Amino acid sequence: MKKNFMRALSLVMVLVIMVASFAGCGTGSEIKRPEAVSVKTDLKDVYFTFTYGELKEVLPGDKLAILFENINKKLDSREVKISYYELVSKFGGQEYFPAILNLISDEEKAAFIGNQQLVLDYFNNMLNDIKQNKTALVEYKEYFWINHGDGVVFKDLEGNELEGQDKFKAAFRLYADTALKNIGDYLMNSDGPVEKGEDLTNIIYPLGVNTASTLTLDDLYTETNKETGVVTQPVYTSIVPTFVHDLDEKGNNAEYTEGGMEGEYIFVPSELYRTINITVKPELTSVEKAFTIREKDGILKEFEKASNYLTLNSFDIAFTPCKIAAGFNAVNDQMIYATFDKNMVITANVTFKGALAEYGTVIVEFPCTSQITYNFGWESTAE
Image 1 (tube, rainbow, N blue to C red):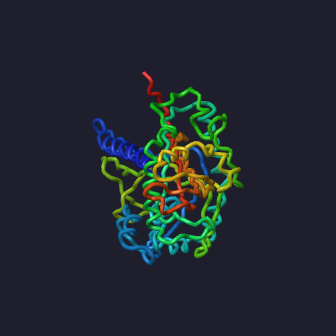
Image 2 (image 1 turned 30 degrees about the vertical axis):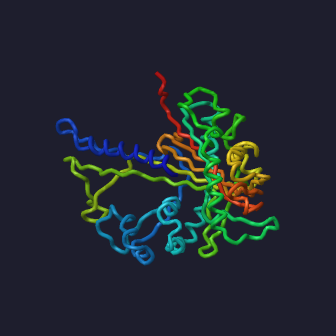
Image 3 (image 1 turned 90 degrees about the vertical axis):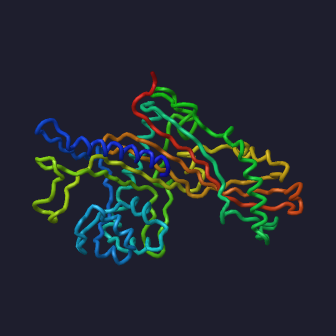
């Protein structure tokens, strides 16, 4: 979700500002009120309902204020609806996140797992339609990086962790950074957009076949939080609405007169942005249903360029749960972007050379990610 999400969100905000600007500028006495939009396809998106009173017991004040920023009178009984995606993006990894999940009712948890097939079918069908019917302009860019953090471990040939991990990590960083200088030669980076109607067989994952994702629910990875009992969903969808003020007959911001709190403004959704997040099992048979698996002599062959520092004798690749994120305009079902994160752990047998020869031959395990992002356009830019 990442910079592509932020770019799409920025475009949405520009549109919202334009809508808000024109909303109060009718010709003559005519007031142009914003029209509320709705989703084109109902995927039974799940929202969790919390009250201000219960959230203030588990959230710090600044986080609480963000959730209730459009509500003037913050009574304990006031409710807010939050999607799972919003919970994860705003609070995931924070110390109070488990306490928030504990507030979710059993009924909400049951609803949360009830639309998995519907969401996965929607994603598969949308991406396959683009690839097979060439319905959108496509831009793409691939990245590859190594996690130099705690996941890097050095062992002797018997599998025992070596002492002095820091010195090995420093040597390995030099090796890896040198090897990756020209990694772009092996990556898919388009010089320009692939226009609507052009063949996408070797553009959209998996490469070389006419279909895109053929994932099933059996291919998706689930995990249960031991502390909260909440299942980490393998596929879930969220709708993020962009709200603008409704207007009264005079062009002023409309307020509730019945059924709402006095002094509260009325907002209507002007944009609906859907996100779908999918976690794929780390088994090859599942990963290859949505990702392209390169041969060993692909990207990692670049590491031979660091031969002054060490020799790569052999290596194995193991997958960890892989991620797919996709964004949609939910009003017209147009896919905006799709990002594929292929997460791996490489176990390599390396022999240090030159100034590093004293380290000899060791086993190094390191996590890395191959990512490709597709951005889809629905109007051709061709002259």
